[in-house]
Amino acid sequence: MTNKHTLAQFYTPAHLSLRLANLLQNTGSLLEPSCGDGSLLRGVHAAGKDFEHIVGVELDSEKIKGCFGYADSLHNLDFFAYQPDQQFDSIIANPPFLANKAIPQQTKDLTQFKKLETILGGYANLTVYFVLKCAKLLKEGGEMCFIVPDTFFTSTGTAKLNTWLHKHGTVTHLIRFKKSPFLPDATQPVLLFRWVKGDFSYLTDLEVV
Image 1 (cartoon, rainbow, N blue to C red):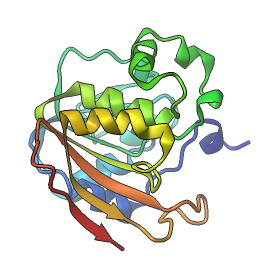
Image 2 (cartoon, helix red, strand yellow; image 1 turned 120 degrees about the vertical axis):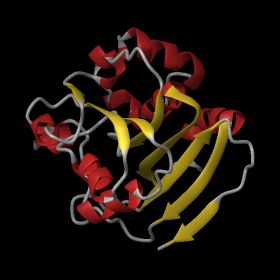
Image 3 (cartoon, rainbow, N blue to C red; image 1 turned 180 degrees about the vertical axis):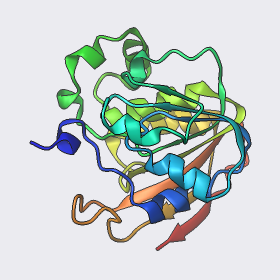
Image 4 (cartoon, one colour; image 1 turned 90 degrees about the horizontal axis):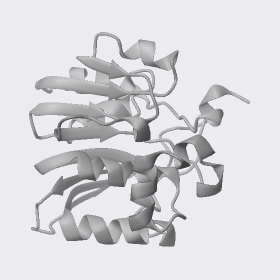
């Protein structure tokens, strides 16, 4: 079994990284919670985004080496074990996907993961946990830009998260791909979205490509 399947990793093509990075509008601090080999961080750099401080988190000790030079600090650990002493202006991610039953027990045993379970009900997939933790790490007015499966906003498995997101902010941008930009590694179509904490305009710029 290849590493990308073991860790639910499908690294982001450069053109997709750039497109997601271009959704970022804030400055200040940036977190990449599943930075892999640094594709999204390179996209942020290529897009000319000017952040004062960039943080990357990655579980894979080999892949994280690709992030050297693109972040001010890097943390080689499970994201749910990461406990920052700050909140962030922006978060960008292509989080790993694993069904709930496939999430490693050592992750489920982490205190931060258990706290999220009280909101999500304990049946959500790993992407959902990533999104909720990231939303909680944002400052008011903070943004998160994510790549997720195209069923993210319609699946019953994300219903509790989407209720929480609606209560606390707005999806300001939504880009849907008719075909997967990850071919041939993954065939599922995906969405790019930008969500802003504390924005209650409930206005979404929708694009289908």
